[in-house]
Length: 457
Image 1 (spheres, one colour):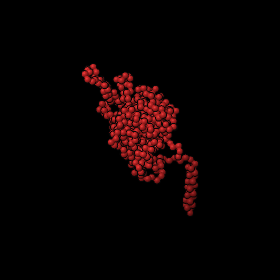
Image 2 (cartoon, rainbow, N blue to C red):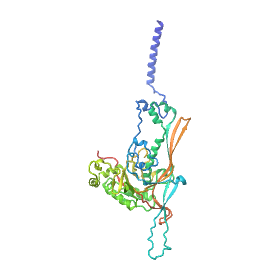
Image 3 (cartoon, rainbow, N blue to C red):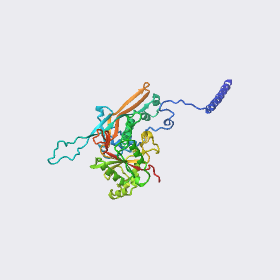
């Protein structure tokens, strides 16, 4: 009996101690041991019921990803089919790739451009001796620089240990080749825009690790309601200031909006600047890139709507009903609508950065925010050879392990560069000074005002 009383008393004391312990613990912060590294048992994927299916975030791919075949990757297209769904005929000579870097080495290269003979010649018995025409050689230029990126696969083996679902473990711990291919595909899809608008892809103009180039605005620049930006064959601060002043005239009024009349202007100016059209579906056409905001403005244009009514097919396939503007032929050009086209910013505009130059083309955060929503938007018309791409090495992959294979990482790198196809008179054949700009006969840029949000909903 005494033993039972003793045991009962001990039980009561134990319960009281447990209650006191619980009270003390509830009044203090509780510290849990977190097991793992990158992936821990405190993450949402462990606190909630977890599906065995692993999804990928939908992403926007620029149209140049479709038009550049070097590193195009298909795996992520199924996650976000924005650009991957485009099945238009692909022009084969929109970008000229110079691969001589592989053989010749170096980071700069000149592409000779032979000027056609232009003298009037001699007729009849007029002597030729002493009237020979000298050959003139101009140059296109291209440079290259390394682009690298890496992905952490595993920071330590405990990250792998805490993953409960085998399917999720396989997805999160798979090697990074596909992720890096996807990243390079999106990064390089922006290089042609950077080259056309600012002269160079931004791996060449990086202020710290570039090759000493600074952005230079397009010599064939037009601003709606203003006209051509005055250019005196010199890429200098005065031209950048003139470009900024012209862009400052853009306001939300109809004559500064995109319309069918502006498309006619662009095609006319393409002929004026001697752009060479591309053969697409048996037709010689230019390509006009526009962002969705300009496409929306065009759909509000009464003249454009009349075109669609009078010349379009009857029935449900008419563009008025389908709304599909992508790939349509109009006024000697094919329209491509690209969600990732950069906008322009000048001093006083939101997110303007003076370290980028007098005029900013796009944002430094374009990988995380591919859609530029600012209101100074451009349409770009391209002919053959609008961009020269230098190619020093193919996309290469490396892996790294550390701490006795606790850490795993994959990296990729490529040596490349893109430049606008400006033709330069390095030897002063035309008297404007050695190294002077001669012409750009492959693209032009037309600037408009367009809000990226609807004001009436």
